[in-house]
Length: 499
Ligand SMILES: Nc1ncnc2c1ncn2[C@@H]1O[C@H](COP(=O)(O)OP(=O)(O)OP(=O)(O)O)[C@@H](O)[C@H]1O
Ligand SMILES: [Mg+2]
Image (cartoon, rainbow, N blue to C red; front, side, top):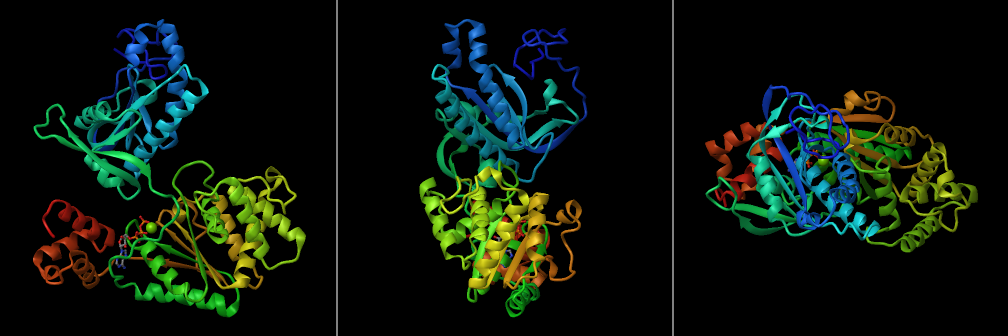
């Protein structure tokens, strides 16, 4: 029976339009299929049928309409596709038809957003009194190529879907339960507690499950450096040179490290930051792949770090700290300070601080960029400053413009902007990467065999193991990518194959 993608109504097979809302129903689904790794989010209302029994169906529909609209918005915001409605349940897919490299994390973040949205809906209308359970599961599915979920066509099928439904039904009320692959793919970004394994249809063994309890702190932390830093002498030297030149010539410099995921950009930056921190101040910011108000996110992080603003600070404390920070900037020019104050309070999203007379909304982009640049110059005039901006492949053009604008400034300031990006930036913003003037690009390639061996020895904690044939094939498979090596060793360790 065709289910309406707009309102969830079941319709008779011959219907071309939905009986409830008149939306066009999908024609027969195309038949080409492919196997894909997807993440399924399954959410259902707790006890809805019991409540609905005593209510007029019209009332039930009216009660749930805002819920469906809100859920679809949240899920799509994170790049998910609503695949279908089954009664009150909603099934969304991440990874099909559109795939992102971080689909499991998107799905779990979307699950938190769903829970928050339910809280908000309940607060707006007590009568709703909704409670949900969410299951998230990652696995291989058979995906129909070209299926139009928006028109009610089924997109994916497979065990991963059934298990997602099972996880949902076992989840705590207003809680999120995830399967093993989702857990493994997201444990660096999400906090979990392991829950009681559950029995699932068609599985002889109970399935291991985890409850998602929170998103780890967004504040940027440089990558952990438990493992010894290997190789990269040439690139580290190039970075040091850029830094030393910025200091010696008192001029801004821009350098961008380009390389594929996991190759070691962040790690190289962490090493650079450690050394640069001995001579000056280092601030970190990174671009985010999705979310609201992300255009200037890295700059916001930098301002927060420079002003000592914490994630947990309330608005009053933030305004106070921003004021204190402005006091420390070495300028007596009140006009200048006012523009900087307006720019920074705009970035942080608080009403103008007492020293700024601008209303936050009134500032133009030109003033905003000027204010940010001037603030950075003043910071750098106090002590040499390195600004690390990570993951530019996610940056919006406006941020790239701002970075180029800051770096092109001739005013005296020992300011090095050190960025990282995956190679796709060369396609999306070819003008940004270059080597003219004070702008440089450093390509980060794979580790060579000896370096791979050294990293493996450290990861395994046993140099003799790194000499074995098994180790050579591990290194060959990882292709000189340190993240792949780490992940392989972690997997072997998880399965008890190495200590
Ligand atoms: N030279 C190195 N020596 C030792 N470990 C390294 C080295 N380079 C990278 N690693 C380790 O490999 C992993 C991946 O590196 P990193 O996070 O720096 O990659 P990345 O290029 O920033 O990837 P992404 O594009 O996903 O941000 C990290 O755990 C890091 O500590
Ligand atoms: Mg990185």
